[in-house]
Structure formats: C-alpha cells, structure tokens
Length: 453
Ligand code: FES
Ligand SMILES: [Fe+2]
Image (tube, protein in one colour):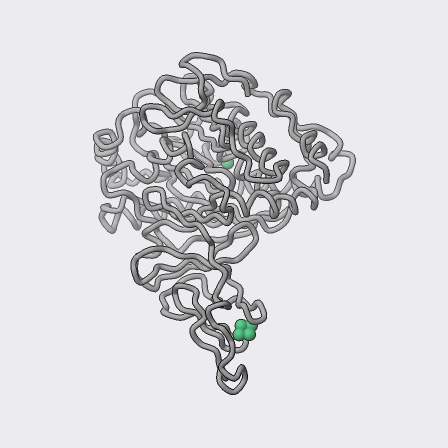
C-alpha cells in the first residue's frame, strides 16, 4: 500500500474519510506495523499492581505482554513469549509471583524477565547455554504520568510527557483531581465487540452527538440523566478539545457540578458533593468540570463521570476487545468504592444499559462493511464543526465551542494518518506546538484565533 493511497483515505481539510480505514486488512496490518509499536500505550495504573511480584497480562497492539512490579518498586513489562519455542510464559490474567515458568518445557524467568531456570541445563545444553541472551523481550520504555504507566517500543518516540502534550492538562482531571489520587477497582471486565477499534476510540474522543439517538431509551429510564442529556443539546453546555497530537475530549462547561455517578443513592450524592469541593481546592475550578469523556491517542479512553478506564485492544479489522476498570478516589470509604463499582458496571459492561446501545452501532457498521463492496467506495462525513476550532485562554489545545462536532475526531484521524504514512516516528513540527506557562504543549495560536481543522 502506497503512502498516497492512505493519504487519500483521510481528507482532514474536507472532513471526509473513507470507510475502508475500518475494514481493510492492509490498513489493519499497517496499524500493527506503524501505529501500535510506535505509540505510548497504556499498561496499568499504580494501584493495579500494589505489591512486589504483582503482575498482569495485557496487550500492546495485538502482542501479549506481562507487566510486573519489581523488587525495587519499579514496573517492567515483557512480551509474553518464551524464547525457547514461543509459548506464553504467563497464562493467568493477574496474580503475584517471583517466577514465570513456561508450561511447555519449563524454562523459568524472574520478575525482571531474566532466564533463571532451564531444565536439564547441564545434561541437555552441557552448561553451554548463555542464559543472559535468552531472557524475555522487554518493553524498552516504560514511563508513568502520575501513576498511569505507559509502554513504548520505539526508541525515537519522545518522552511520555511530550507525547501527551496538551492532553496532560485534561488527564489531571482523572489522576490528580483530589490529593490522594485514584484507585482502580479491578479486575477489569473484558469482552469482545464486533467492529473496528477506532469506532470506540473516536467516539470517546468527542462524540456527544450520538447520545440523544443511540441512548434515548437509556435516558428515558433515568429522569435525572434525561435532564443532562437534554442539556448536551445546548450549544453552551460544553466544549470539545482536540490535540495536535491526536488526543481528544469532550467536557462540560459552566459552574462545576458534582460527578454525575450513574446512581441516585443519596450517600453517593453527598459524597460526590464533598469530593467536588476537594477537587476545586486541589485542581482549580476550570478543570474539575472536565467531567466527561476523553481518549488518549490511540486506544486508551475514560469517562470521569461514570467512572471507568477503558482499553480498546484491536483483534482484527472488524473485531476488538474492551477492558473496563471502574475507579474511585483512593481515600473513599469502602461502601462508596463498592457502590461506585456496582453502578459503573450497571451501565458499562457487556450487558450494561449504555454499552449495549454502542455495541450494536459498531457491530452493524462492521457487518455492512464486511459484507459490502460498493459502500467502501463512498465517503463518510466528518464535517460538523469543520474549521471552527480555536485557541482558548484557559483550555490548552484546539477548542470547539460546543460539545457536539467532529473536531476531535478529525484531529484523531489526522494523527493516525501521520503514523501510518510516516517511515519513522512522526514528530510534529515545533512550529505547530508551543509550551505554555503551565508547561503544556498546545497549538501555537493566540487566544480567540481560528484554528483550521
Ligand atoms: S516453549 Fe517455553 S520452555 Fe519450551
Ligand atoms: Fe455511547
């Protein structure tokens, strides 16, 4: 596939995208070669692996990896791939250990991934096997942003902090909202969606538009949510954020309101009113209202209000796996943690009220694309809000003055195209970034100036 073929699939200036990006085997293969091995990908939150020897298995793109807490407290990750014949060395989702023993011929590896045990080492290999050369293949770069650990295979990638750029300001609304930070409540719920992984990533980057139609029946059943849904139609209710680096978000504007947990349990209502005051004192009034939905490019999303973290693991052009973890303020009392977990799961799991609606959309699009050929010649419309992004004196990045539009989604695909068409790590030119006083990279335009999308 030539660069020009991919260029033609995403026309950011016109706001048009070919549906082939959601179904073509060649495109998916290109993502596995050029996107996932280059990006910083979410691995784990600090609280998922609290003790030495804690481990979990996950994926980077489609490659299985093991993430483990080391003796010195640091985090390491490795391909879950025995160097003898390629068997996964860890078959469990998570646990605590000091050794990963391959269940095929019994090679064993310590927490740091070193090969430490080889059955019949003396008789079979006559003691000549150089164990130091046959350790697990490490994820070479692991960095944390306030307890969120990401891994990256590309030596040319910038630091995680640079990769996040202006997204870090918004990410603070998740991980640094109150002084003690968050606790992730595992284990995650995992399930498989039909459809392309980007449907989910782009929706979480900015799609408020689908709420009134897709989730109509859900809102009808919860009067206190119904009011919120109506409010999302008001043009002044919220904003969209689009990063030059591909990240996206939608968030509420105006006077901060308590986190809208999907429950009318009065104990939770009271708790979140207090939590809001702590958040305002800690993070400032502007950021506590970032109370909605974000995607860190390419496949890590979360809903602060719900609340859950989400990974979208690709499985093929038309299949992906979702992993979902509820989270809560780390210092919350046990009954709040329990209630948050229950209410998040009520709405957002394979049988959750919200999740079923979205799953049907993504599966249906995937179904017609897989079956059809003529539809792949058509173009899809991404023109809502086209050219309406602007710089803002408070919020970093490109801001769209309503919560509904395609501004972050187009930003996501602009960056996606840069990764797929670039021979090396696609650095964004300095002229398109600047560092603000808060240390956050954002679009280099002055407040109020129109930013082309
Ligand atoms: S494949 Fe792991 S020990 Fe043989
Ligand atoms: Fe939805």
